[in-house]
Image 1: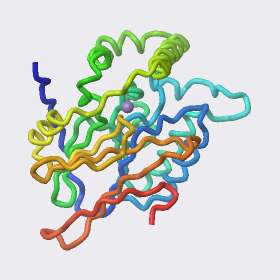
Image 2: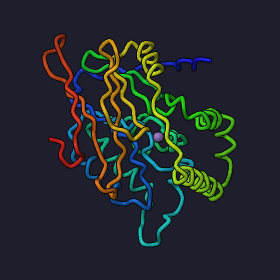
Image 3: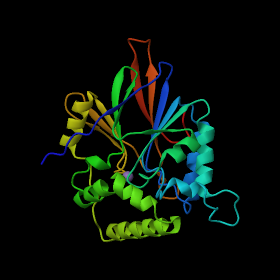
Image 4: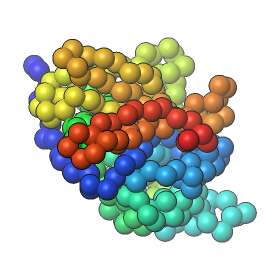
Length: 275
Ligand SMILES: [Mn+2]
């Protein structure tokens, strides 16, 4: 059975946007503070008019009430999560921030969004920018060969599952998330291969969105894939400042030319070298 095409949400960029940044798969976590620092530095230095975070900002997110919980370390007055909120809130001054859920942080809710001054986006969303339609997605729903994950996704994205899960005590939710991560790590160690985006389905999504370019993350395989009929698929990099070589990339769209005859240039930049 062919997968159904999801509803395409729409976002019209304001006329004054010139520079738009896309990042994803930062997998921020308390035990990886170098990536957190790199991301914080990026947020303070980018000149973008809008930043789109296309999922998996966090390695795990068990509910917005983590923001009210006491810091996990006795050395710090603010928790890791609170530090992330502060960084986003500061970056929201003078630009718009958008966040789409990933497979790790799909429980990010309206309280977090409000605390950070960001807008939650549906997956997928069509962005109209520079007289072009850009289809944005995390990408996990397009990985058709990841059959067991897609079944898990359908379950955990249901309102019923989320209500039941969020009603559990925070400590219990953290425990469940840690177990799920261990299972995923052991599958990786056992050599399980990760799915990639299904090209025919990506083309059907683009057609339904009347868009030429799909921008997504999730697969951690940064590349520009030309498709037929001038269509393309741009894959974002994940971020890991402790890996060697370090992985971190910003995909940037720059609008140029007069209104009506405008074009968009695509750049891939290191977060410390944004031009
Ligand atoms: Mn992902």
